[in-house]
Image 1 (cartoon, rainbow, N blue to C red):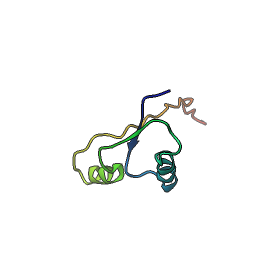
Image 2: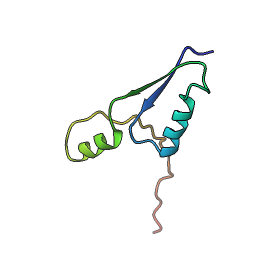
Image 3: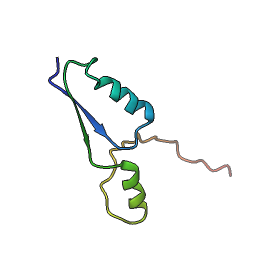
Image 4: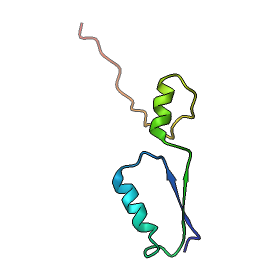
Length: 74
């Protein structure tokens, strides 16, 4: 059994996530504590970055898709 769980709160999760978290942390579900950590609201930080303010990049990963070279029809 784990000693604890950690929820990294972005501040911009869907309502259902926060409702589920509330249920999990109600004291009736998990036999271990849930630590909620946050570095602020990720949406606000991204909007500020769009205005040229400095912020850390988001933890996003993308898959590179290799496409065949374009062929001329001539």
